Length: 261
Image (cartoon, rainbow, N blue to C red; front, side, top):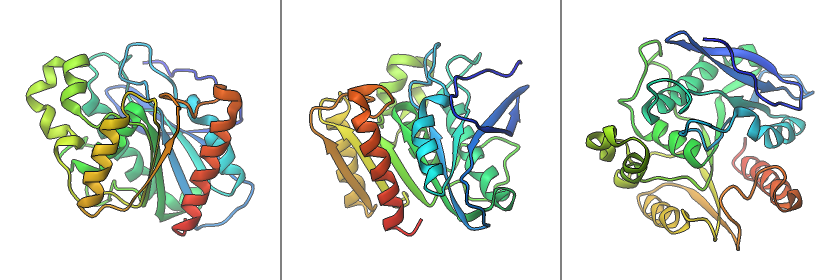
């Protein structure tokens, strides 16, 4: 399968982190000017990836470039999507687990502390990221099970947590498995320190608030920020004169600094 081109406007370095079924999956790396061997890395997983015309890793590049300017190694991650033949969300979850493992297992190559890995994800990417932490049974054969796929911090933008709803709408063949891969139906203490951002006009607002409240009651450390009147994807480049883009990326940097990353 040929490599896909994405509309990056910033210079990035490409590195293949996984090859599966002939598909090469890549990291698109934004490196900071500062060197070192103990830097924090942030992996970005964009939403809108479960359909046949998915968003691309480049859609998070403005957040990634900003964090790289603050000294983070920022990486937009390519995962399998609805554009891939035979795709289901389980593949994306396995890819997210592989990405964290690959980075952690080769941290020295990027000057990264293996205990300073952050995942930032939106919408379907957020479902993928939370599920990759929550469901240990989802792994590809090429992964090293000795390496933890759980990041050291998590940032989520408005993500569908109910896999029953997701599978009913998009993947009805997965319905028998839906509750087993649904964060909403498997609340437990499992997340690293988490920043959760969402607009109050987002259709997922009530579901996300309920999920976060129950996860917090189960012992998870989650910082919840609601943006009044904002819609799904409000933080993306070009929305609202880029004011939410600027604010959310500053919030992410402040959150990571507050937890020592």
